[in-house]
Image: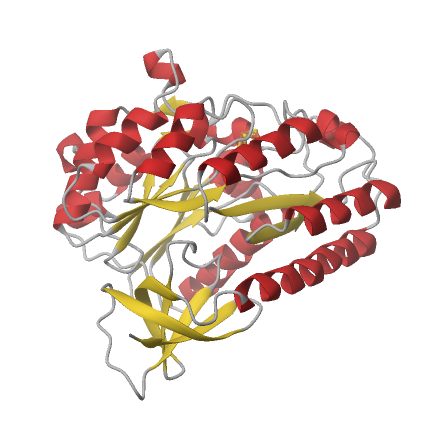
Length: 407
Ligand code: SF4
């Protein structure tokens, strides 16, 4: 978006704005994401046929993964691009890729937070996952360019950086010969204006020890850690080729909780993986009950072609997968409600993202945008500037929402 804007195009991320050209960045790693991407393409084609837009381009993971099939199945798209085709895509618009524009991003998020993608691709071979096939091998960006990008973002008003990658903890191994997430974090904490740094998608195997100490020490690094653990039954973890087992997962969580008091741990799980019997599912539920994660998301297993698990028998019926998702979410909802009740009366530093239904909607350092809990403050009673940090006293708590007042 930044590259096109520099070349004189008016670029918007919002789909409700009027445009001559639509570029759809697709996702394609599991069934639901593929369906959403296809629905979005078909809606744009419909608009094109009705004369509302002139051209439709499709890029990203779906068009990389199905580069042969899509032009045949949906030929109305003007051109398809893969995950490494940004330069080609820009050329369609007569724009040259300019390396010096690093950091000159047009944000698709509110001005005060930005995702910082520190590496691309993945060297692991988790059995259920199509991502390495789509995005290729792990390629880290160097620390200098990430710091430069973060500095430019800070100059534009970004206060919170959300670090993402397919495998955050692998960062640096490919280009420096060693894991460098810790060095990167230290460099980012020195940037003026950046007040919160949040870590997403930290793979549990080979977790860099020193990062735990840095989270504990550095004020700017949120007491928040997103570790996708996927399951807890040893047979399933082995089949998933995750490289860890129940004992290792439990030890890592215990260590994180001991080293960083108040750490909010988020995890994601998959239910309905081949071979997940009632007994194994029950083991997962018992473990969730015991671990009491602060945040938890759960996916229904998606049987993907060209993955290792795709060769197994998808033996858990879809309706059982759905029931298991619902059961886990009901369980987590109760856990989250109980954890949230303990927050009533406490004061938290919050940042406010938007206004909705007469409430300012914000977050604590323990919450990432869109996926975690929110803090709501009555907009008929208070005036809050979005993107500012404010001390909020929690007055009421629900399962996933907190309500509060300005202190
Ligand atoms: S680490 Fe993540 S992206 Fe890489 S293969 Fe495993 S699940 Fe996929």
